[in-house]
Length: 169
Image (cartoon, rainbow, N blue to C red; front, side, top):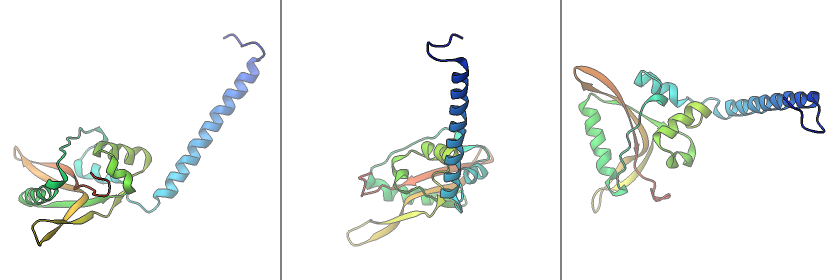
C-alpha cells in the first residue's frame, strides 16, 4: 500500500490503532449507560421469546390499522377472541412516547438491540361507548395468548394500540 505524501506508515498504523481503541471505548461507555438506564427493568424480547418459542425479531409482523373511532370495537373483539381461546396474558410496554411512533417490529428490534421498550404497565383510557356511558379500553398493551389450529396450540402476540388523542393517532 502506498503511503500518501507527508505521512509515514508508522503514523497511519498508530492512528488506526488509536481509532480502533477509541471506538471500543465509546462502545463500552454506551453499553454501560444502557445497563444503568435499564437496571431493574424486565426486557421485552425474552418475554416474547418465551411465549412465542422463537426469537421474535425473526418473525413477520402483520399490521392492521383501524380508525380511532373503532378502537373500542377492536378492544371488545380482542377481549372476546382471547376469552374464546381460553384467555391469555396482557403486558405493557415501556419506552415513553417513542413507542407511539414505532411499529411492533421496530419496538421488538430496538428492545433486543438497544434495551429500549422494557416490559411496563398496560395503558388504559376511558372512551365513550354511548351518550352517557364510558368503557375502560386498552390504549397500549400486548396480548399474549394461544389459538388452536389443526389440533395444535399456536402462540400469538397482538399489540393493541387504541390511539393517542394527544398525538392524533
